[in-house]
Length: 114
Image 1 (cartoon, rainbow, N blue to C red):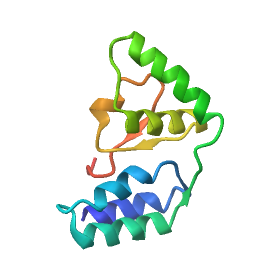
Image 2 (image 1 turned 180 degrees about the vertical axis):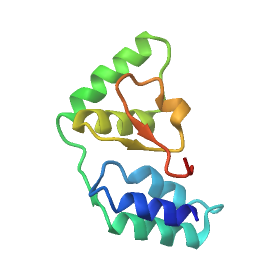
Image 3 (image 1 turned 90 degrees about the vertical axis):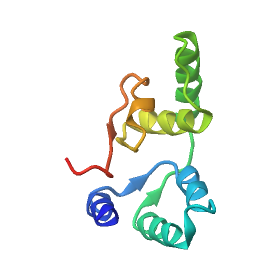
């Protein structure tokens, strides 16, 4: 059901910002080959965007702002958030709580059925 939900939602989006982190997660021993195949299916339907300007300058500003506020996020999450903010995209994540620290970032959790 989760994969079906993700496929239905992904079909309405044509772009995907950061594929490295989910690819890494799918390669862990706990994930198994099934998750790797499912992720490949989802990613094949999307355009993966390069990390280019203005994402780099957005990263710098965002990192400084979060560190100054005493609420930093992980390095990979910071790259992901910067990409989404710079391009004005919705971030699809199961880590809504972590990304809530990023002002102006709109998140959706496709693993939930709301």
